[in-house]
Image 1 (spheres, one colour):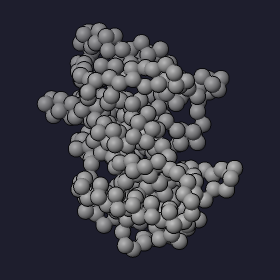
Image 2 (image 1 turned 180 degrees about the vertical axis):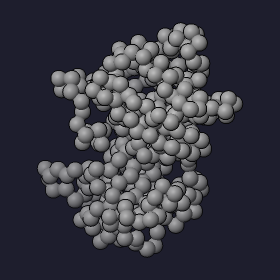
Image 3 (image 1 turned 90 degrees about the vertical axis):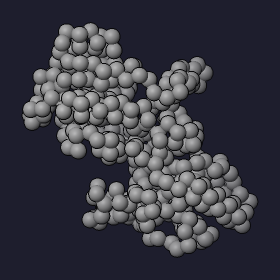
Length: 377
C-alpha cells in the first residue's frame, strides 16, 4: 500500500499527488480512529467495488482529527492546535501508524493522509468533492450514513447524493453496522446522547471506563497502547514480578485504572533492522517469541503511596514467563484482552505478592483460552 501525505496551503487548497489522476478510483473519507468493525466494513466495500471496476481502492484520512482542531480553535481564538497536542491527542484511540497498518491488511492500494486545518475545513463540500473527481479521478465515493463534510458540515448524505445525481460521481452508502445504537453521557455526565454501538465515540467511552472486553467485540481485536520501555523503581522485580514500564508519551488511549490480562509484544529497539514494518508483522504474529502473555497494571501504585502523596498514572506490564527479558529502550505494544480487577491498596508486600500471582495465573488462563491473535482480517 502506498501512503502519501498532503498539507493544504494557507487558503485551504490541497495539491494532490500528481500521479493519482491516471487511474480511476473508489474513495472513502474519514479519521478511522480505532479502525473498528464498522470502519472495516466500509473499507472492505471500497476494495470490493474497486475490484469490480478495476479501479484504485483509496482512503483519505484526516490527521489531526477535525474534533481536535475545532475544539482547540474554539478555546484559543481560532488558532491551530500545537504540534505537541497533535502528537498526543488525549482523545485518540489509535495512532495513525496502526490505522495505516490495518488498512494495508484490508487491501487498500493508496492512502492519502490529509493534514486537517481550519482553512481546509472552510472549503465547501462541493469544492472538495469536485477536486476529488478532477485530481484523484474519483469514480465512486463510499460513505457511512452519518457522514458530514465541508464548511459548516452541511455536506450530509442527502446533499452529497444530490451532487452525485448530477453525474459527477457515484455514491455508495454503507448501511450502519453492528447491533444498533447506545447511549453515552454528555460532558457534564447528566444528559445522555445516542450514538451507534459500533462507533469511535462508544469505543472511547468503553476504554475510559476500562471495559476492554466490550471494546474487543467492537474492534474485532484487543485495544492496544504502544510506547518505549523506561526504567521504573524496580519494585516489581524485587517482588518477583518484573515489569516493563511504558514512557508517559505512549500512543493509544489509556484504559481506566485497573489490572488487565493481555499481551506484551517486543517491537525491538528503534535501530533494530527487525523494527521495520515487515519485521513488526512477524513480531505481532501468532506464536511469535516476541509476543508474551502479560498482566497489565494501570494506576498510581496505591500500596506504596504515603498518605497525601500523589503519583502520575503508570502503565506496567508483567510478562508472565519464567525468565525476565531486558526491554529497556525497546518499543513495545500492550494489548488488552480482559479486565481482571480494579486497583486497591494492600496492607504490605506479602498480600500484594499473593494477588500478583493470582493475576498472573488468570492471565495465562485467558490468553491460552483465546489462543489467537485478533486482526482486521
